[in-house]
Image (tube, rainbow over all chains, first blue to last red; front, top):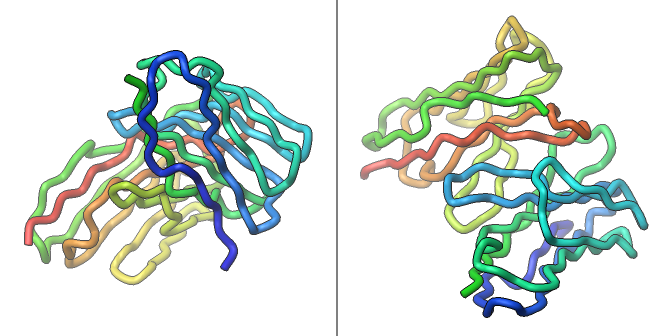
Length: 112
Length: 111
């Protein structure tokens, strides 16, 4: 079944560590996105990609970086995690002109 | 980017009651989308609206695209415990043409 997968689901990590959040989709969607969801529920776009080798920053400034080497894969990396990075990170994908986005289940990151 | 004003922020209701929530904006849109996020999961698309005045149902859920194109409403009839979650309105109002979301309505249902 076509879907979008995020790993890990939960991650607790110490300050200063480098981490990569994985996101893969099997739907052949050209566009992919990373949203950060704060405890107050709001969703903020932090990165997006319109295709291979295309990455852009979103509406909310983030210290994370992304890459898009393959259509199906859109990982997010934090070079040095800090407690302020503690949040829920949601990956999504869509087709051009499509009906909304398909979201993964999210990664809940806690930096201690 | 633009803003979507969603209300209420939270609702505590009894099982069997009907629910109404809405989303407004100062901007005109051609699309309104409603998502639901179950606890611990990502948002899932419930209903998509593409035309002013459009009324669309999905089971016990009914959504309407406001005639002014600046608002939308979501109604849930005869709520059940599995309706618990966060409901988001959404639109292509981001500065890069991306989806933006309202702040969400958190629904709690007492059995």
